[in-house]
Image (cartoon, rainbow, N blue to C red; front, side):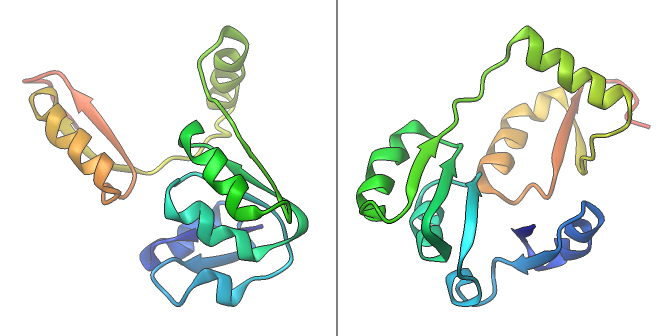
Length: 146
């Protein structure tokens, strides 16, 4: 498995089981990889188009962030690779499965910071910027975050 993340997150990727971590701020990832079977694009936008060259002929690009990205990606792929999207939504079966994984301590997450609920707008801005560095937890105003 190959995964990209900020240079400071490479060790975390290895802890998660990634075989080949790549810092996305380095040279173009497409210059370092070829013949990849599947790309799971969790970022969207230009990352999807930039991922096309790393895929082998007949490979698969799965884009999660937006269904709006799919048609332009298919056009850019020009039939060389398959492009599809995943619409993620809550349902009882999925939520039960996630709860079971959490109960079995099989989920790993990085808590970047804990903020008071009154800073929800700031937390949202930080998350949208891509600079959060992990999950943010909002706590009720006046609650102890310890």
